[in-house]
Length: 247
Image 1: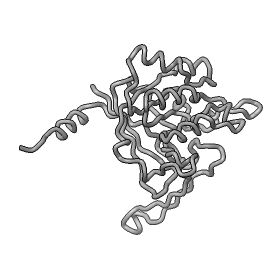
Image 2 (image 1 turned 90 degrees about the horizontal axis):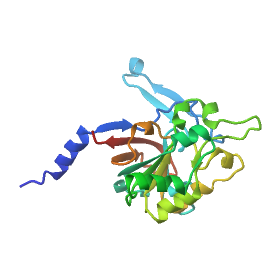
Image 3 (image 1 turned 180 degrees about the vertical axis):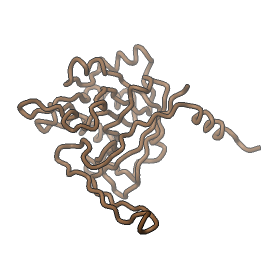
Image 4 (image 1 turned 45 degrees about the vertical axis):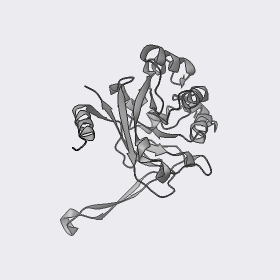
């Protein structure tokens, strides 16, 4: 007799709510300040050539995108070396929107993780942990996302190394994600500090930046499907991410 377990699992997934966590990208969207803007060219048109084709030129870290370890770490895993088994993971959402509303420079600390576990239980091994800050509501304004003061210092939330170390070393998470353009808070990036991002990629984990719609995802119980193109030795690429949430 055939094993129908996968078909039953697919039926369950199809019956769930599918929440797109991905921004559509185009020229002019928010991005890391040192990167060039996207350029897009029409190569052929349906009207004149019978089919529409665009040529896209953008950095790998463009829009909602994945960063593999090699983005920061010499010899780290590249995009084509991340196995597809890591692209479907339990999704945990650390909701700090209330904290960020009070302090735009907020960083995810161990207290937030402990509060989450006290309410929802232990973060499962192999999970994808997303930081819900509410920052994606500022999209697509680069100025609002960077939130610079009169001295040019950016103010937006981020992760602490302390929290990431706990998630990696004590909970063995596979990946993390957030709504901002960077892992580290804006005040750190403004002075050239990238301690949080260097830590998580150095721990052979990957991350997704500039997620959206995390406010629609429960704190626990969902899964994330994160996928991307497969450039050989790739150091980053736009990603398509979806949260699958039980009804």
